Length: 290
Image (cartoon, rainbow, N blue to C red; front, side, top):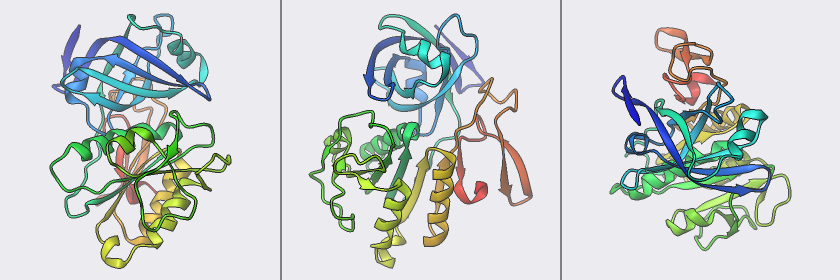
């Protein structure tokens, strides 16, 4: 069942195709949701009903979307009873979703060196953006950097793709991105093998510092993750004079702009303004927020 709403949002009964569990109570959920899959863009999210017994929906970023096959994937970590109930749902069941919601990322052709920085459950939009860049005829050169203090929601492996300027020993990568021929590197303070020992933004800073000025002029940053990580990404943007887009994560009730419960202060040409993360975002220019 699908009902059009405002020409972009859809209320859809999505069928669970599969649930994949990972360490740290993390799950990747694939949903058959043709209306959402056709319109999803990197940075957009769905507002999802976890269980019929829990009325409040949960916002989850879209990690992948296949327009032809009609499915989307989301990554979530159990936090509270709602997502714990979602983890108990099984293939064949349906969940109600509203989506895709939100303003997506926009890459600019004059900046083909796209650096995608994801932290924790902020990783999904970076994977989605990387996949779309890879599929584009434009000559994008994405680099995906991911950080986590718990095991990653995939099985890392040593990269076969050389990235000049990477700190010695930083070789762990995401196999899916490797299969797409997109270089990736991982960061953690948990001592995981092959990972950079520090925050993912520190890894990004070291790599950016290795670039000559001509290469830096081609870089654009994209980030999603915890607020301190996004603030650090904005600091990198200031230090290296780079454009940077961030996807914010806020608690929200309705997810469609009605309740104004997810507002943040944003700097605009007319002065400071309160913007709703759900529909005015979740993607904003980093220096307008931080």
